[in-house]
Length: 488
Image 1 (cartoon, helix red, strand yellow):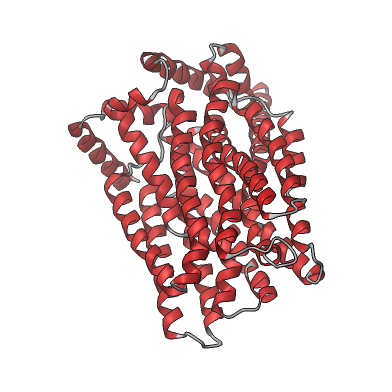
Image 2 (cartoon, rainbow, N blue to C red):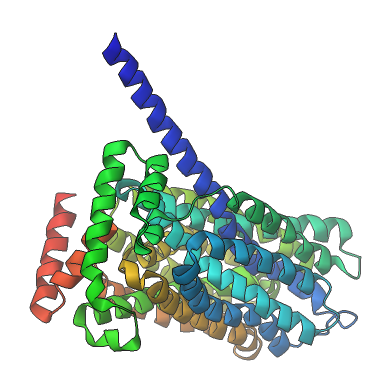
């Protein structure tokens, strides 16, 4: 009888731990929701704010309004990483929630393009900070066997935010399309999840790994016991202590650390994976999907409504990607995704030439953008953010991920700024052929350089990079990865 009571009590505790972890994940990923909404809302708002009686935007200033957020995000990623290392993941997310709120209001009431660019840049600082801090926070709270599914919930929330942006854009355009300030209604909605994020984070604990780096092992254990069973919490704290001891030799992360082979390898891989995410051309569709569909032949309102399909498939694909990450290795999943996105872009380019002037073209282009996003959000996106949250050691995690994501956002900025200019000057088909070439380069990089990270704790990954830092070690690591892949 006593054993039965103990079993019931242990089961209840396990459920409580899982429920608390789910609550933490849900609240913190509202940073991802804001990321998605604020980057996606411009898709539908742009045609309206570009009107002569509004902000009177040219193709270049359209790109500037869109990409100013992305430039801000690049710097937000760097400073967000540093802030999260110094002040903690939780406090940083609280500060980002305030910035999201203020910047969203500023964009809503912008009287001209200059003010809009300034507040879009500030909004980008919040987006970039969230893109680094939230996945890091989730990775440090997650048990190794569930890390892939938990961290990629942030990716699901990002695409959910984009879907909500597309949906609200379509609803507002359909009901208030004749209003002069319809785009302002689209932008102001972003203040609501910012308020929820701020209040929600007040009840969320700090990352136990960050607490441990400050020498507060008792506090770290208390947090771990809230989300793990007793034995697992003790074991995980021992691993964290060991990793902190090993990292003491690095002292402070600086550019000099790039002289260390294993550190340099991680940074190169991180930057490469981040850039791979962008050169697929995903954000040309997420930011300019309405413009692409208009160029293919849809009217403005029909293009905004049609763009909702991109949001729907993004959410469905991201959900599928989360499920797959618990069952499929990261590297082959990324390669399949890149193959799919590159093929979709190639077909868009080809059909834009073959069906030029045909009434079927806009529907073909819409179908192919849906196909593109199925591969992108179902594999490339989830794997990118998960790998970036996994590969950096604890002392370098905030800075290392921040630097990699800085490169991601700079690539995003360049694409966001130049895409409307390219679309206007060289046309839809040639623009997408450029992305096809970049997609092939991305496949080559991943196949040659990206290691497998599935099934290893964060501390085990760090140990692998340390152990296999030289050339011979890299060959051994690849061999061990091949064995792991075969076994799985």
